[in-house]
Image (cartoon, rainbow, N blue to C red):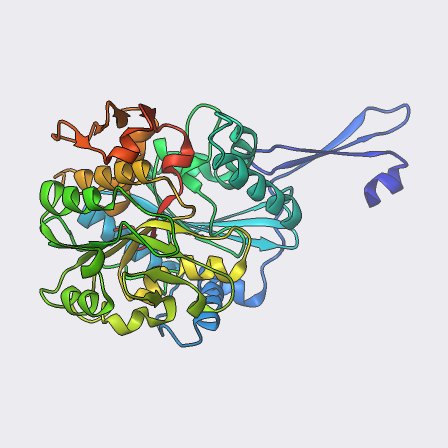
Length: 454
């Protein structure tokens, strides 16, 4: 603008929405137009950031969770170099090429820091995604993606978010043949269902496995296969004050007897004492809880998992001992909900794996109906046992793709399309709802892997 004043010409600013690059034009009276190209301008790094912006951002996010949970959660220090070494080691063990994408708000716009398995990190600034605009778009996306009455009403906001979060780094991801994205997000962004971002042709989940971490320092990055791990399945189908979950008995039976092997406890057996004693008896390394879980505002004691006899509060999870060797590899909550836009709720959900002391957690941003939860969970365990699936997020991705593509569906009172199972009989109240296609992102996009994607 100052240049325009000097030249006595109006300043025109044109931005490339994919790269964030700017072109400034000044039309000088009786002269040709003067242009200046500026590549993705980023504010200068501070002294600490020059040393390692990755360490700074990761520590910042860790501090947020430690303040919320009211305790020191780790003394782990993360640097760009240590994170690169982790990504390279995981690739050697799993064959999956992953990157970590940090996203945070700056006064200048949305900042993306992409940490690669090789070389240095890549830093991009998206000025048009300022805090207010981004917040409004996220809220619009959340409302439309959970509205099944509008078959494609989510596309506008979904595509806009794709242009902000993915398009600026897409060429780098393609050049490096990346197949796994691990997002580490700032406040207001941690409940964003990244799987449903859309590029105009396809969803992000059709390209990548996707995971979410609170910070790298709070994540167990060591790899361990879980294919032969027995599962503890517990849940409730009826509640005094909450909505019934009629598919839970079938869900537990299918998972513990047909798709996996393990023990199952239902309703009256689903008590705090039984959960505590059984989960450490073998010990089980996969715990599947088919029950309501609610993440509410305020401190962590307000959020809970509903058992038969009590509510297991988020701040009580550490008492279960799941963090003790051998650490529980995976905690699954199959009927979960959170409140969009509340920072405490967001921190509780994003920190679920950390507070539970487990390596990974699978849960949903919003409450999904019983039949689609059964479809997603059945598909997840079916794919997790496949020889060519080496990480948890890829098993989740394959389950989501099967629903998106209409390969898993409800027909004539059965859930069909789950591996070798000819059909899973639905309870009468669900069968009465008729045939259903589960391709709308409401049914599959809310489920996310929190903590280690491996």
